Length: 253
Ligand SMILES: Cc1cc2nc3c(=O)[nH]c(=O)nc-3n(C[C@H](O)[C@H](O)[C@H](O)COP(=O)(O)O)c2cc1C
Image (cartoon, rainbow, N blue to C red; front, side, top):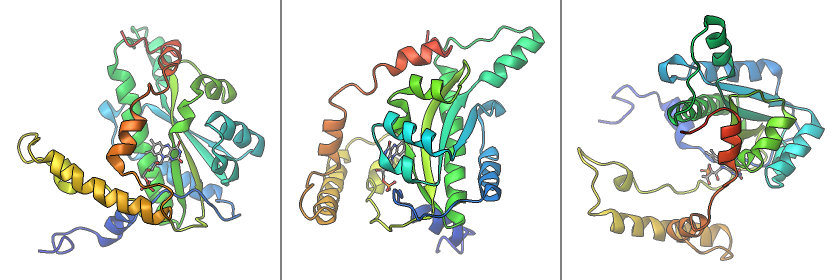
């Protein structure tokens, strides 16, 4: 039976499954009413224990976008998108209620950082999908953690807040190819984690992605996903982030 007949809405499925990151935007503003509606969708994301441990900062000021573009590793689309959003894990509000009620504020474990990061990501994805329904497009920006401390200073972040991701948003001025994803069999396991066929499944993904990159870049980039990941993961990622996170109050005991 087709998924439509099983009750799936084709619109939302099509929206999700036609995803591609957008990095080039038309010179057209996004209305504040739309932005508020995107935040409305973010607010309705599920949240661990309903902690709602995230905040969203909307940045339209050109000078601030320019600075953030630099801080994120000179990603020019941050300066060029009409609105740049910073999504932060945020327990500052919780610190206020704990103080008000005179209860200990227990932030030493890794758990709450994970809770905040997950809540933030769920809110961000709801936000982006709703943006797509308005004909907008965007790209999430992990580069916001390159210089997390400077970003926090620039945006007046209080303690208990950590930038998790940024998001460039605007009306798309490009329609890039869809980037192939890991084959389904390698991510869906029945009943138990199944390692046996992983190497073969990943080899087929390697061939799919080698072909994709070779075609997309006219042969400039030929390596597949596995080779790219092995390079990506061969050096430490943002090692200074840990000390900033600790400074923000998450001691990661
Ligand atoms: C949390 C997160 C952080 C990302 N950070 C960046 C970034 O800093 N710069 C960038 O150009 N793309 C960034 N991306 C986009 C990914 O590179 C992109 O989603 C991935 O390559 C798959 O491509 P697609 O989104 O077009 O399908 C990020 C995506 C996510 C989910």
